[in-house]
Length: 250
Image 1 (cartoon, rainbow, N blue to C red):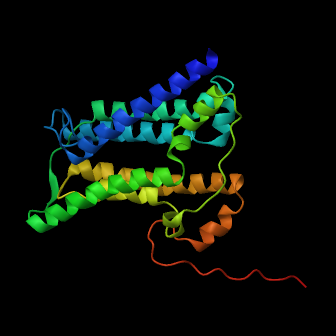
Image 2 (cartoon, one colour; image 1 turned 90 degrees about the horizontal axis):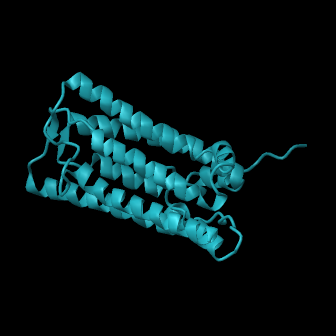
Image 3 (cartoon, rainbow, N blue to C red; image 1 turned 60 degrees about the vertical axis):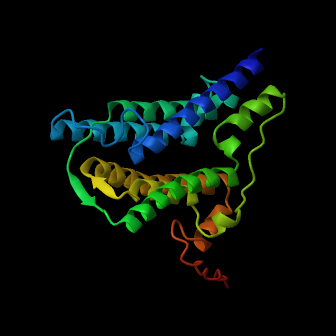
């Protein structure tokens, strides 16, 4: 019964994530949702800025702290280990729900592009960002990333086996195509409002910082990642880095 409950819990967490994922497309793109990033402004600029920075900080802290190995070791004393990843996904989804619900539009336009060809290009780039994001997760095992593999193995009575370190073709061009997808999503807009700019700047800064923590953990889990990091660019596929041969000691 416990195994069935953990499986249903993991599936429910994934369903919440998927609903939030779909809402995020409309929220950032300002379409098809009741409240988007640039809905009509309700509060003073200073209040809106403080609220939005607080929401972004809440997400950053939750997303980073719960992903650290030390936190996971403590957290699995409370939640079943097979459900740890699903719980992380659930808390991340709830942090995003809070961001969407309490986000305060700020008014003001930083740039507005009106040329039809440029607008169409930016809309296509925005869509490609989401496609790249989702595709990247499947290259590294989408179901393990979002906790479904863990709860399924537990339900089948099979032990969890850590995924081997692999570099599918896209990951041979850049180390973090998933984050590249996010950056395209954040910045590809024909109308950049003040609120959108705050969102894009802060989330970009978070990604650049989070990569450092993530790669430190990856090197601990997969020592071969250190060599991979020397060979493959982080975000821009502008050619492989040359690796100097190791010096021999006399």
